Length: 163
Image 1 (cartoon, one colour):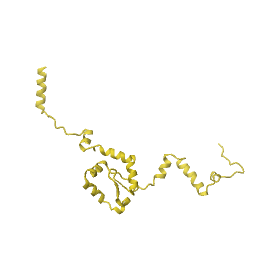
Image 2: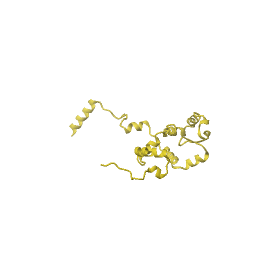
Image 3: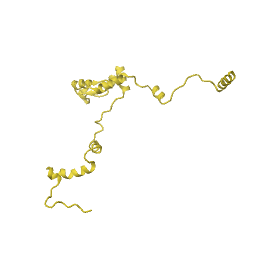
Image 4: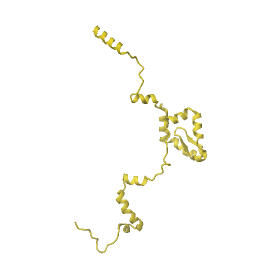
């Protein structure tokens, strides 16, 4: 194969043609080479520096259910955080979603939204108990009738004699 030779008399780069500054011209080929023109890898590169403290930690449904059934538990949860650190100085709290809001308006719009309604629907269902979880994987206590080995063999012999 022969190497490409530029057209005589034309010495302009793509960046110059598009009117970009020289800084962009240096970064563009590297960015295209690393990520292509978009796609999952490009998104991954741009979001990898997201601060983990900014991601919201959700509260489990059984904890929220305990807040709803026990006012003492809810007050203990609310008083555990200083109100100066909370959004809206801790005045606007959605019990069902365990979230704090900046203003009454943002809380009202949250209550009209589908995420809040989904959470309320999930809270209406009874939470799973440890007993149900163990039964699902096959662990359970069988307190049914137990026959000793002697009685069991005797019953088999009687049935065989009767038939």
